[in-house]
Length: 524
Image (cartoon, rainbow, N blue to C red; front, side, top):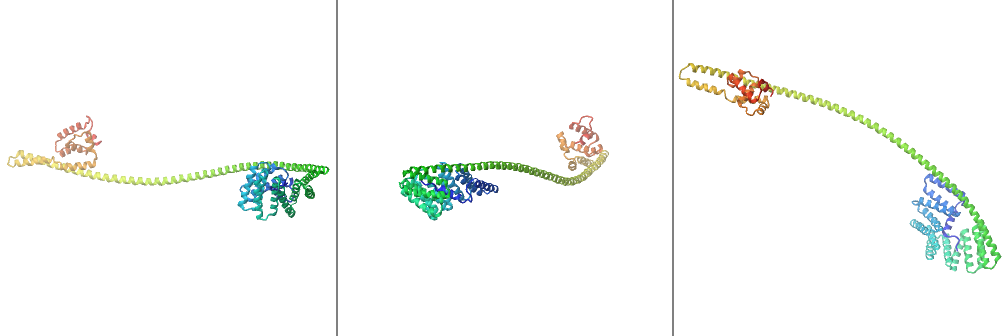
């Protein structure tokens, strides 16, 4: 059976690029690189360092720790460069396969294959096809295993990757060996052997000699098997490949056992056991040293994480205090600004109020002046109307006095004269008497009086709507403070008749005894 799969050999090949042997010191160096990349915020370099740390742990047999580092690298590479992520997924799939998580390993391998296909990386595709073939071989699905190893061979031949093709031949030979088709297995192992001799890949060359030796032993060619196994033994000793030397001793012991050489079989099996124990102890020491380094790294990382957390907390506190201080300053500025704006607004409002007050004052002065002018104009009109009504009144008085004198003269003539024109004089006297009762001059008088004393007659009508025209004339003359003889002359009645008319007017207006009729009318 093949000793090393394509995936395992791929990791070992990458580890050989290091200048020093994978060890605890190499892990420390990679961890320092990882911390530096983390401080610089370079996620790609962080992921690559984690991937290398995982490979170092794998080579020492610390598979759980290796899986953890590769998973951390995957988180950082999810949106990183395609090929770097696909490389890490291939390593991750191999570790999941070692952990018997075959479904997860298959999913991861197909993810890597998809990335390589999108980027056109044929070497990566060939490597992933080989890994899938190895996975299906472990699942005893040999048809699928052959299919994917064939796809790997086809892909690597396109780029003439001879070393990769040699590894695929090794893997196909392993499948044929599992199916006990030893001739086919021998043919593919031999192709791999010839290539490993050319490229100087000593570890794989040793495995190829061992694999061909196994085929000859399983087909009964024990002496030929011894020759190939001896070659593996020689190369293992020269290169101090203790684990491969132990395998060679074990195969020699089995071969001598089949040849019935019990002493030689026991000798080589004992050498294999002793070397296995020695190798196991050495590996245990290396693992212990590496575990101690991992413990120190974890403790250091925990301390760094704690310090980072404390630093972040401090930064948050300082940032919060800074923000609060800025907010307070901003609030202070806003308050001051608002206060100043308020003062400016109040000042502007006071100025506006002052301007408005001045404008109102000027407007009031203008209104007052206009009112004064209107009052003066009204007073002038009143005086004019008063003069007019006074003139009318005086004219009426003069007219009535003249008529009264003519009446008296004519009356005297009629009484003493017996001539025949007595009739004509009596007719003239009647006309004079009738002139006392004409309403034309009273109409003009009432119009002027109402202009001076607005709503006066309306108020009287509200007190007593049954007032006669004679009552209204008497009221008007009393309102004008006219004396009794003048009122009697204007009304064409005697003073006694005037007293009777005043008495009747008091009753109509409902004026109580003792109260002045003149004062009552002046108050309306």
